Length: 284
Image (cartoon, rainbow, N blue to C red; front, side):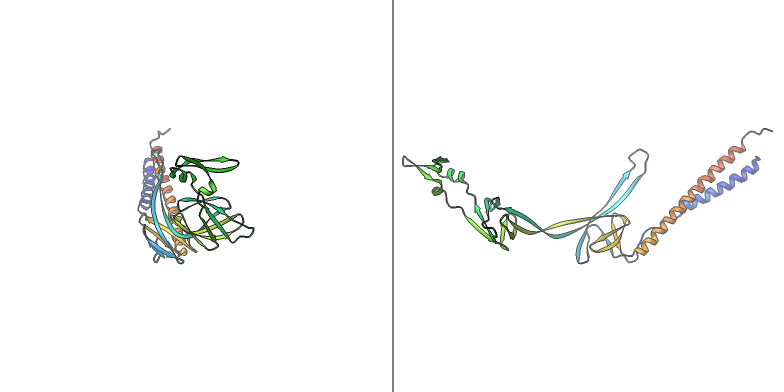
């Protein structure tokens, strides 16, 4: 091939490759933006949706991939939105079981087949009572099937029936809708059956929603499209038509950029091929 012709081809392909390279490197990638978003929020901001209050707990950026093995790292931005809601919790106290109340143990006692109340019977700490009495042995004894306490007074030892020695346990009765101070909360008797008493109380729990970049998310009963430009701002919008149009524009831009990259690579390879052919020795 004549070198003058080769020079023309090489110049042509270099011109095409350079032009496409300039277009690829200078073309601006379209972004996502909303003129009048429903919410523009930063970390820590509160906002209201459908009568409920939400808080942007955090906006975080994580990097995946790479790791020094030649792969490129991918950056992902996510936001966490939280809402505190009040829920009802319950606990069942079975007939004959023990519950801790006011620092002591109480036995649940339910009488009858169709009860409307139950009784808490104090469980006496007999060991503590005996230890506090200098005249009584620290343990009870049994004689003829009956339990006794050994009491020594004035060099005289006598056996006192346990039923007489120990005080009567305290009893507390409760009906449906009665309130009880239980631990660090106030509980309400919700129902009573022959098997158990059920107490309920209200507590607050935190519900978290994780939001991904450019995703649809339902908050309360409202659906939004979420956009995270960076770790400083979370944008929520119900303008889905605008979002889809902008997303389509980004997809078209990426498709065109890929095509231009291919044209540039082919042009440069073609230039190299023609140069190689120009310096091949002629057989004639």
